[in-house]
Structure formats: C-alpha cells, structure tokens
Length: 479
Image 1 (cartoon, one colour):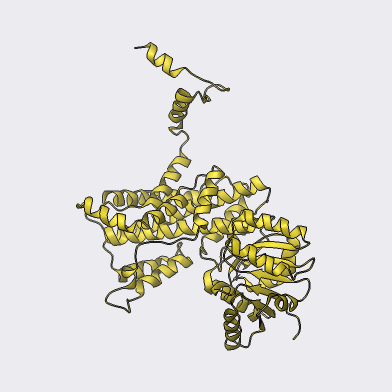
Image 2: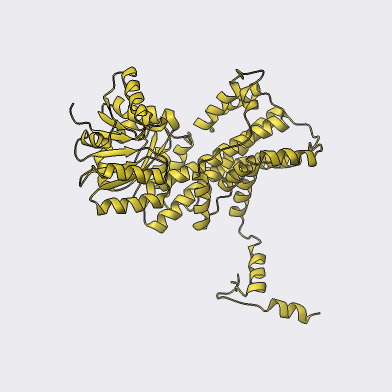
C-alpha cells in the first residue's frame, strides 16, 4: 500500500470516530491500538461506513513506517502516565522532524514538559484540545491545537477540513499559541461547560420544584428557548432528555437517573487555576461544589430526614411569568460564566506570554463543541470591538442585556431561596455581577481586620501611601 497521510494511536470511542472523520475527509490514515481488537473493529467500521481509506496495524513499528514523512501521529489516550507510555512506544520508531499530537484532556504543564523532551529528540509536539464528544469527533469537533507552530502547519490542511464547519465563520479550529495553551484553553472550555450545565440544571429545578412543570412542559419550554437567545447544544439536548420515556418502567427516564454527577478533573483544574491566577470564577466554582455535594447521596438522604419540613413559601406562582423570568436569569448567569472563563484564559495568557486572541476562541467554539451557542458570535464581536476588554460584562451590548434582565434574575433567585431550592450557580453569578458593578465593597473592613491582627497595613481613599494603625491599643485605651 502507499504511505498514509497521518496516523492515529488510541482507538477508544473518540479515537475511532476522529480517525473515521479524517479518512472520510479524504486523508488516508493509519491506526494503531495496544489492544489489537480495537484496530480490527475500527477497520471494520471504515469498511461499513463507506470503504474509507483507513488502515490498521497491530504493532507500533509497522504503524509508524506506514505514514509519509514528516510523520504526524495523533494520540487519543487517557491523560497522565498512558500518554507518556504511548509517546515512548511511538518515539522509538519516529525520526527527526516527525510530530506527535496529543488530542486528550491533558494538564497543560505536562504538554509543555513533553514538548521540551521531544524537542531534545528532534521531534515536534502539539497539545490539541478536542471538544464535541463522540458525535463531534466523527462529524466535526472544535479543535484547539497549541505548541509547535511548525507542527500545526504540517496538519493544518487536515484540521481545517476535519473540524466543525460554521457557515458564517469558517472551520472551528485555529492555532491557539505556544506551549500548553491549547490544552489550557480546552480545560477552561470544560470549566465553562461545568457552569453552563449547572445553570441549566438550576433552571430545571426551579421550574419543576417551584413552578411544578411536568416533563412534557419542560420539553416544550427548553425547545422554545432553543429558538432564541439561548440557542445552544446544551439547551437542545436538555429538551431531548425531557422527551425520553423510560423503557425499563413507567414514566420518564430523567426521573430515574441517580442525582449524582461524575467528573474527570478539568473543572477542578479550572477552579484551581482561577485561584492561582487570583481570578474570581464563582459560577464555575459553584458548579464544581454542586458536583461534590451531589456525590454525597447517602448523606443527603440522611440529612433530608433530619431537616424535614415544608420549605414552600406558599406564594402563588404565575407559571408563564416564572418561565420568562427563569429564561432571563439563565441567560444573564451564562454571561457571567463565560466572562469568568475568558478572564481565566486572559490572565494565563498574560502570565505565560501566549498572546491569545479571545475573539478567535469564541469563534472556534461556535460549532462542534459542547458549549457551542449562538451567543458566542456576540462574544466574538465584543472582543473584536475591544481586544483589551477588561470583562465581558462591560461590553455595551452585554451590559445592556444584563441590565434588562436583572430584575427577573433577582426574582428567580429570591423565589428559589424562599422555597428552599438551591441555585448556587445563579446566586453566585448574581453576586459576581453585584460585586463587580459596585464602586465600593466592604473589603475596607476586611483589610482593617487584617491590619488589626496581623499588621498587614492598608491604603487610604484620601491620600497615597501604606498605613498601619495600632487598632487594639487605641480601642483598649478608651476603656
């Protein structure tokens, strides 16, 4: 056989689907997996899905040697040690100038370490975030490659065709920047995704628990929302979920799903990075805390028996008004979640000298990925208008939208509190907005406390300099 254009190692669901996508776009591809049955399975799929130019190999040497030079191999294996093991297996057969692309959810510093190690061996390295799940991988994901620009240029023609295509803005891929920037951007994308999912879950909870909407009504509401400003993949699939009947029993499947959310770590990494960078990200943090609390199922069941009671406020709820208010609250909260994510990326870009283009990131998230949404186009335009925008909240369009929705937002949060329904994401988003918009916060008291017990000093509003007061002595001298 003739040499293939590219190789892919790691044939779990994402790897298989991305390999088939590449082959379908006309690029002959070699595939390899340590468990050889996965290779045979992928080859069989390629035949069934249109005799695609995909070729399977059971050993790493023949796999690598089947690829045209300079060779490019994409890895899609579990983050951490399996990546290092796969690199070692492949690098033994690669030659100077060849390239390895890690397409997994990897910690960005691991990517930077590996890029440096590969450079010492004469190999190029890319860390590429891939979003869109198995459907996206098969039919067009959003792709975030970072690292060696030369390596990106090797495969740019492939990525431009394989990525999701959005009619008004092009392929959902771009060269992100140096080092681990691609993995970092994908990590924060996932953090925003955590926030988005939590906010949607809270909207569902308020409508169901306070508004008493049925699953049929919820399906109609979310389907209708998906025709307007909330148009997005996550709102679309939420409407679908409410329509699915349980094939194992009576009722709807969503009501039988255990209320315990799993996670793979990227949301936690995002929150840790926000703290390291001193960037406020309360919506994303609330979504992570909510997953932690969901995991305490047995404790919550026990607590529910201790804290029994009627938490209903007893007030009559206008269902139509509630639906409209929750829609506005969800949209305003989403703006805060995206603003926080963008601020994390911006702060890291400054720290690392990556020079990331936030508008371009919004563009490549418009299609293929899990957080794809129509309002990402408006986020792109906001950063196009002002590349130095301090916060998405103060873009004139978004600022006006939040002002138009804040009354509804406050009503929803208050209604939830009065009925004992937790809305940590919406509440945190509202608190973030209220803190950010206020000229003066009670932080003056906190700093005075710090100076009192730790002589940490403080600044004054009426004169320059650093000051310390003997608060204890003065207070006790008056006794």
